[in-house]
Image 1 (cartoon, rainbow, N blue to C red):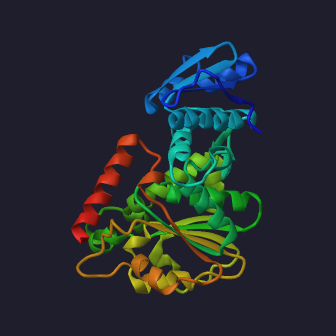
Image 2 (image 1 turned 135 degrees about the vertical axis):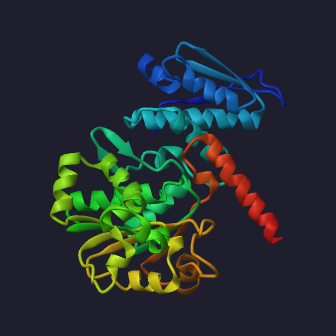
Length: 334
């Protein structure tokens, strides 16, 4: 339950409404507004209202809809604080987007979900789309996470894989990507085979280092409990009792996608991620990720989670870039 209450003062006018919300406790107020009011300033910048803080009361004056949204933002943030979550700029921005968005999503429910915790750092969904993606992974055998760069497709999938391993729900993790460019240029690169393909797998290693201690990760990889390998290494195998993540799946051919999906064995779960707008396959080759959406719809245990520019959680300019490209692509097709 939120810590705040809301009342409407009698001097409100049809065009300018006054709302108040109460935040009990000085510590709660500091947590809500930020040490130097930096979080309050983010809220003020997004809404055309006046916000006045006195003691334990926040007064919002302005357009009725805008004022109601601000009160709702404070209520949602208070619920997160009450649940022990530390607020930051990203949390506040996500809360504002959910309060003002078309989705009926409560920020206090979305942002309180936890995919994984490591050394006091929680990996959580930042948007309603990411929350639905995590729920799909939890409840399905195969989940396809499709969306642009920066939407957390791979990172959240890997967090769920590490969590499943820690909970002993699976006995191993297998992370794989198609090394499209390496297939043509491999012979010109120096070093062993694994040194040649390392640049294509490096993003997966980087994410693992965020989620596990280096010593433990090294041990698990030496024992084969965690395997990071090119997609070609999956051929001919049956992957039982494993959490499998196929990344950059837009660069698979339909034949490679079928090969991968038919590797899934008993007790396994798979997540396939990719961005169908960034296909690097040569010539007129069709993307296996695009084709599979036409083939595997309406099958129990298989889910397609579509993420968009609204789910981009990198720098705000990345979200604007992705949205601009989406608009440009729509115009090209029309």
